[in-house]
Image 1 (cartoon, one colour):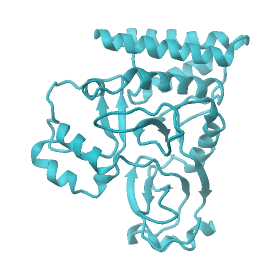
Image 2 (tube, rainbow, N blue to C red):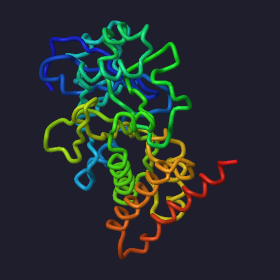
Image 3 (cartoon, rainbow, N blue to C red):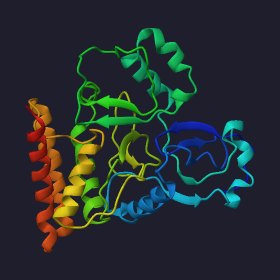
Length: 312
């Protein structure tokens, strides 16, 4: 990476890190994660797990950002970049440099604001710099409680915008394709990478290029694909009953990106069946003929059992 003449702008924030980028030039394609979040969260672990996922990425249709570099606080990477951060962030720390998942363009952001943002906030949201960094979290396992067209809350953000299943249906997005991509992703992460997928995040965002798999079109979102990111909470897992139980626990700890069993809604039931079928098929393609071939069905059984136990 070369010397930059621009200042870094914060484009996101999580428990582990703040995320930064620049607007133009050779480094605009990168996201820089700073380890300045919660104690106990590690970008070095994020880097290690990210590399494991990239090793199996060719087997998946989900998009995975390239992971370029991990730098400690003593790394020469900081020499020409520390002063490019705002004054309160001019303290070197561990950083992770990955490809940036590009946000949705302004025309898409305005459509989402028009559909779901309270009217009195729309102008400020449309003109807000932080809301330019729009990625969408698809929640196939959750519907909004109310049926109102726009948010009832006097707060709204396009950063990691939560798109629930009823909204996905309103926008005529391909929920079944998204479910299949998620199922295939988990199957490969479990059985090829031997990782429990704990706290990974699925987002919808524009494709990096036209060669990416499963590019979906939409009158509202335009071309988009499913991406995965954030691997710092992932853990190695064994391919046995203990590992399956670990993966099921991680599945339920995570946000409800994936479909869940046990819904009273017919479409939700069909979505879970689609997810389950794809998960088992993708898993068997990996494990067929091995002693571990029984584990995917065990995973499904434990997920369904846990869902039944959680309901009154």
